[in-house]
Image 1: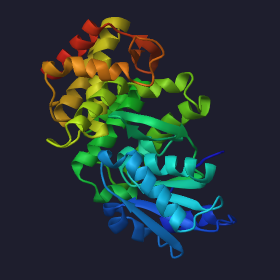
Image 2 (image 1 turned 60 degrees about the vertical axis):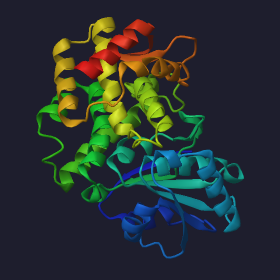
Image 3 (image 1 turned 90 degrees about the horizontal axis):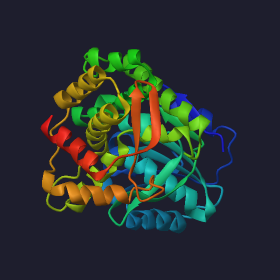
Length: 349
């Protein structure tokens, strides 16, 4: 299925244009409580039914997926119904998977409302839920009919949520060019961006990800580069989710920022990535992100979680590493000792 990517300042008109000529018998929206209250009214959909789920990464579960299926079934959804996911990455991930599997697949549209969802989760057709404490362990590739992106939503976000998205934008810049990276870390970004500036920066980042997706839709080759920092990040998130009853779960964006630090350390030691570029990027992350909460006592559990990463094809833990900005290597491996050194570097600076 070809997916349409739309940048817009007029959500209602854009959604009307996307729906024009379609013959959906029913339209459903999926939100969490916050997006139902703050974002859904901006769409002005009169003939739709809303399904509301709990907020946060712990809600991206089999139980929530079953609830969405049940709501769709009980409210009369059919093969020719539409699900519109309005929210952050959790909503687009689980909503896309619900659409991919209900009645063997119904259409869905993504309307991301967080920076992280705009530049990452809503693009590329990856959908899924967490399972057995592992991030996105169950899922499918399912392209949305359209992804509609409006920077207007960013005006309602706290700084923490903005920085979650900036981490993925930083990753895209590292995969793109030295000039792009310099703009990210030297331009007082994201603190001086107006609405128009945000729209341009977001779409530049989106286009980088879309370039990889178009070249490799099912992640069998170059698209793996988008996992830069994510082998570490998913382990950090999984460890945090296991402790969610006693602490606040680590957000994906912050986990990615920490993962980038570790990946750059390995890139320097194994691939001769330039140390000046590594230091500048790590300095930006250190200045704008909290210190990670884990200790050296957590290393063995983190290593175990990394071994369960779905990107591994052998017993070895696989990483995306950089030879230079814009020059990457996929499926690189590292020894347990090298991984511990990277974790030490993250914790100790």
